[in-house]
Length: 150
Image (cartoon, rainbow, N blue to C red):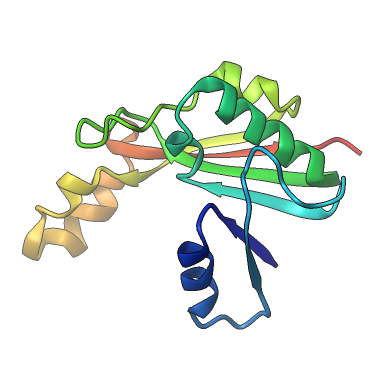
């Protein structure tokens, strides 16, 4: 398992956490990954694409992810479904961005109860959270799986 981060501090912090599997972390630009073609069975982007800003960088990162993905591998993307009014520097992932990767979306689902709502449930969390999480309009993020064909 290899993680990449845009700064040395983030890369170091990511690998300092306990893990059951050996892992390494490298400083790398998501738009120019330092790996050979077809090097990984899975590539993950967890709320990172939305932070890249302009569409060109997002699409370059997805194209690079597809390049390092082995045949039959999966690109997993977890991103917000809604704009973040508290962080205007983020950008929603669009269908055209995903199309740039050249990988078909094999699965898409909404997840994660809206955090501001979940935090306000207080003593009713155990009862209400599972119920509210079943309502798609209240889910803040989506999980996408894009599979590279063999």
